[in-house]
Image 1 (tube, rainbow, N blue to C red):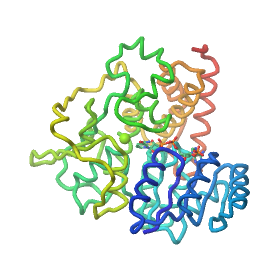
Image 2 (cartoon, rainbow, N blue to C red):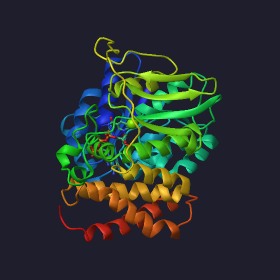
Image 3 (cartoon, rainbow, N blue to C red):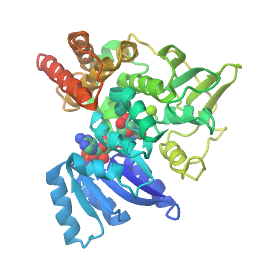
Image 4 (spheres, rainbow, N blue to C red):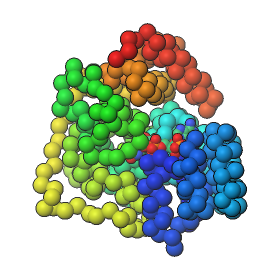
Length: 396
Ligand code: NDP
Ligand code: MG
């Protein structure tokens, strides 16, 4: 099976490469993409020899091209820019596309893969948050299959059984129960959370991930994005999706059925498990991850999320009720605010304030996007409004 990997140099990318390398008889890496990390992508090209390598940044692609030439890596065609990424995503020789780009920047390539009718292993939740309705429609029209690899959604997908397909309403399901670790600030008082630093925010207690999603996990924005993601993937209304904090991150999510059964998927917090599940689906392969040890997993705790200390989760839920323009603005403002926080120019508490201010300023003036261009236009407007708000904030 030939795999193309969007966002190969990132955390999801590395886990996927590890699995492909573990199963050389089963998988072939056909294409890879990155943004600017020339050395990172070059190392992958050297090791795995994909036919296609695309970089979003044209200058970086130029450098990669000359480095490949120097090293005699002539079997890899280097592509550049948005069209290069879309070419890898829609490549006719590719069987499955892993969508591991971070942020709305991943939407064009997810769209290209969906339009080409691919089986798309979706990590890039922001694509669904910004363009859920459009992606569902396009996937149905083009015969694309979505396999979720976000661990919670992959867990629910597993609980729904082998015949379930994303975007259809699951039979006999009462509720989806989306688990959250609670992040590094789960037990912190509000005033301490507001002043938290970058190193504290990216120190996730259970998972090792890219910086943006780590900050999102600390603010519970990530759970908000996942709530919206679950709505689109599993075609259920918001009142049938529940968030529960489960600090051990052993249960990755659950599905409650109408007969009183609740099914859960349990495992170690290692993304190679959900990625392996989707790479091999409907079969199973080893992932290099050991199963749970009952002598080391003695407790499973649950508590409700604290929406006072983590207001972004409630905001995301409200945005889903308001509609696609609101979720689009939520995502854009968060991306802008997280970037500013990571650059040391915004306090942690400013992230949810920036989202709230942007939503208040903009959403009532917008109508829901009916095309990808409209999605990108809302994204641009929200970033502008958010940037204006951010400029007025004192440095932390
Ligand atoms: P990383 O930051 O580790 O990696 C991001 C990848 O996207 C890199 O390959 C990066 O390239 C590329 N990229 C960044 N910006 C652009 C751009 N403008 N155009 C094209 N490519 C770009 O992120 P993660 O792997 O942590 O997350 C990826 C996605 O998966 C996110 O949507 C996240 O929410 C989701 N996810 C991640 C999990 C995890 O465990 N990490 C778990 C569940 C979901 P470069 O290296 O050149 O910058
Ligand atoms: Mg997740």
